Length: 78
Image (tube, helix red, strand yellow):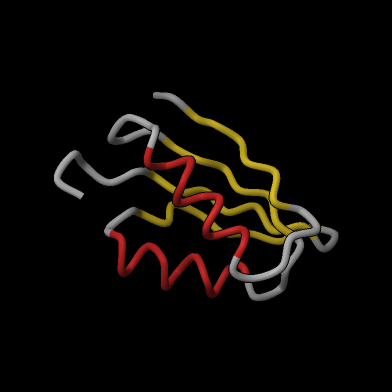
């Protein structure tokens, strides 16, 4: 399974989500995207993004001010 990393550290809302949406668009269904972000709003923004776009939020964790958010791209119908 493909897993791509997106470094969105230093970017403020809504840029991490916008960059993730663009990257996911080019990925195969079922592929995973690991987003690194420093914006404290990012975890909540990605929950909302996944609910509306149909992608799956696999995991969201924070360590030393860096949020690691793992997403799985939705199927081809999305």
